[in-house]
Amino acid sequence: MALTVTEIARVTDECAPVLSTGWIQKIYQPTDRTVVLEIRAPGKTLRLLISCHPETARLHLTTTAFQNPPTPPPFCQFLRAHLQGGRINHVEQMHGDRIVRILLTAKDGPCSLVAELTGKTTNLLVLDEANRIRRDLNGTKDRIGQLYVPPPQQLQEREASDQTRFNPNISESPYPLSAAIEAHYRTTEGVSVVDAVRNARAAMLRKAIKKLRRRIEAWHEDLAKAEKYKHYDRYGELIKANLGTIRRGQSEVAVVDYFDEELPTLTIPLDQAKTPQGNMDDYFRKHRKHLAAERELHPRIEEGQKELETLRQEMTAIEQGAWQQPAMPHPSARPRGLARTGKTKHLPEQHHGPFRRFTSSDGLTIYVGRNARENDELTFGLAKSDDLWLHARGTPGSHVVVRLEKGSDPPPETILDAAILALLYSDLKKSGKGDVIYTRRKWVKKAKGQAPGAVIVTQEKSLHMSLEKTRLEALKARSIQ
Image 1 (spheres, rainbow, N blue to C red):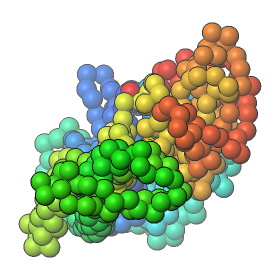
Image 2: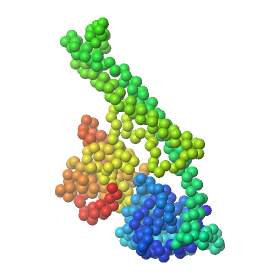
Image 3: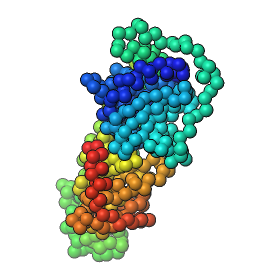
């Protein structure tokens, strides 16, 4: 059960005096519905937990150290971009309801963070100085820019009794009510969280096992196909020794097989459309394909089998009730860039690679390649089809990618932030101005036969940019690498 009006009033009274003298030094979002503000107050560092889970909606000080995702969610990125470093002026309960407002002075000026701890409609919103909504946890885009209107109060909450479930007298903490609330929800919420994590992990494992099994089967098929080319170097050498006797248009040639001690006559099929030299080159090329498959596929299959066994063992532990949440992510199926045959793409690691990373003014992550290899990895390894892709027009430079949610449009300010980075990390930097093209990643294709990073772009738009000092300084301040 979420906190009642009375409980929220009491915990707000406990937290407000100490929080109102502090500033937000870090922001975390350990789960999709939980935000933790790390607040520096005189002589101490505090953590304020805001839970927007409908069944356990609450706000209180916490001493728990949460495990955070490798990459902060978009809402957390927005909070970091706009509220991190902000000073807390006041904390209050609004209208005697289950709503708490934190008034701030941040880098963009006065603003507020509003926690609606109202059960099914629970939300967390960022308001500007005029009380207009800038962003909310629920992602309701139609509310952006609208004046904030609190949800209607429920009669049963307005008439709630003064009874509380939490006894602050049993705690020796300097914030006893927060400690009592945390202890209560550690048990009730902990069980459901573990179950949710376990079920999510099991679903992911089933998908990864199925995908990896198919990939291993495909590698075996490719290996079997390449096996028939095992002796093609021999055919190539025999054709080479008989080039002078072979004519274009022949469908086969009979030669003495000097690789065999008995020197039998061997009939070698020929492609009538190719020259004798072309047939020889074709046999040598296919033999090289066999060698490459032997060299590359055997290690892949061996590594895949080991990985598959690891995944199966973890799945068995979940089914038998012996699974424990790992401290670090477990390996799953090989990256999607690992082809069935040919070379392996060098994809970024789980922390999204060595690219430069920035946060836009709207809280979205911007990735910038450092060189041709990173450009190739960023565009064709990390980026998804709906992500925004940018590059300085007609000149060497970095590929720039903005990670977007599927079906969403990039905000105008984010486009400008990414475009100025594309200009900065290009040969147009010296002139300080130039055109930048942008499009969705799905309209960017590799240029066949060209060096890594060379692309063909369609359906692009163009911006004329100049290196604005204020925008660049703000982006560099939000660099997250």
